[in-house]
Length: 126
Image (tube, rainbow, N blue to C red):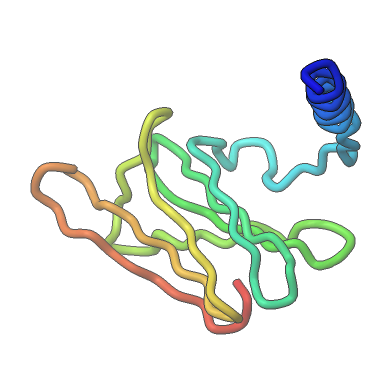
């Protein structure tokens, strides 16, 4: 009985290990252009299952979002906007979330220790 149990466990472990190594990845697709920045990217899926990607740029600090249209990512849209200089660094930055067709971006403004937190939203999937 012990031998049968050990054999069954060995088969399960071997199967689980083999299943994890067969992940197929797609070809990488650019979300942003040269000079758009690439700090702390975040992703969320809108109601159609299309990814919205957020990233930051330092100097000048800003946040941009691009949305997959089925064939490529849209032209990036700056979401930080006038009057909001978001905190952006390689180790921290803004966040992105989606619920249905609403996509939210939350940003901490500069300077980090004194400025407010801003929220922007899109109701058309980003």
